[in-house]
Amino acid sequence: MSSWQQAGSGDLPGSACLQASFRSGNNALGGPWEYSLGAVGGSTFTGQFAWGGSGTQLESGNVSVDLKVPPNGGSSNLSSWSVDGATTLSFGGKSYNSIQKIGIQVQIDGNVSPETCEWTSLAITFYDSNNTPSSVDTSTHLPNMSGSGISGSDFWIAIPDSGFTAVRAEVSGQIHLNAGSNKPGTAALVGNIYIWTDSCA
Image 1: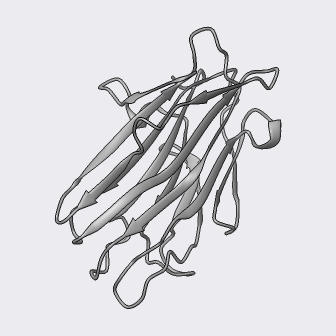
Image 2 (image 1 turned 120 degrees about the vertical axis):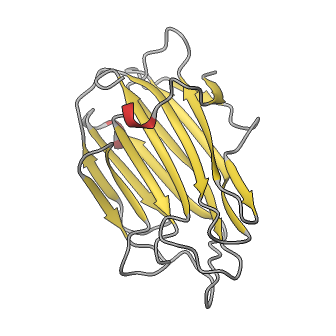
Image 3 (image 1 turned 90 degrees about the vertical axis):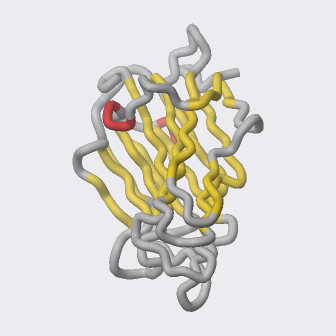
């Protein structure tokens, strides 16, 4: 079983290779983006998604998401990121030999009240070159932030078993965003998935 632990001082997002993100955006199929995929500090592809709610409220309910690195056992530098049936984003990043770790982060900026940004279910699985899986037990903690007028983040790290060379990984589950009766800013509610590989660790 691969490990699951709170991020430490050495788990710097800026040192990761790949980043898949979701955020409040403008909660509409146009304008600012709601999800993205790309290189950390580099080129990024974006997508549009209407989370839900009426008036100034944002209430997404449980939204299914899925990140595959690489998808379907394909090219080792390709990844795909999908949000509940919206257009799947694909990105070809740096070639690598192994995946070192995966970071799962949610954050809120305190500009809306009440607010929630959370994973309501989360599955993380690493695979070796023989397609042998190594699952992560995330039942001990699902990254979440919730409250009124608070700011901060909740950041956790998945690491493959010692001696297990991960060449592929999948992160899937459901996320929930809520901004009560206050319209949030485009980046008021944010979630990030970071991938570290041997080419950028």
